[in-house]
Image 1 (cartoon, rainbow, N blue to C red):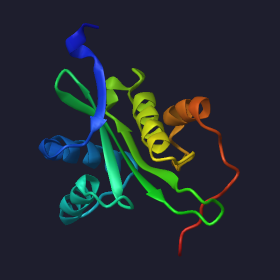
Image 2: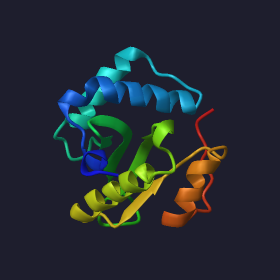
Image 3: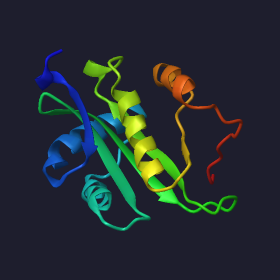
Length: 151
């Protein structure tokens, strides 16, 4: 891999809107869902906002093309003094899976959490996401919690 093909993880920027939208659409499709297009602009604005309690976004870029994204949120927790970090969305383009994109994006969230004095990072995934879970099992610890939603 030459220098121009190196993977870069960086904060999301305004100029990423179209490519980010394509990746987020693919992410939602992977999880067998969709969101109204009107939500895309709202979410993107939140990702770029300066409210420390709002979402932040990182993207993975290779050769000038976005190939992955992650969104995360710092929030208070009743069992800790410091905030915790929820990694809400993580997606790598299928063309680059297995090349370390997911790991680099998670490491980017870990670095942001460390910089914010936030020792805990957690995330959820679907039970059928077997490939990603192989990575998660290597870089995280499986929680015994089971998630319920309002019915």
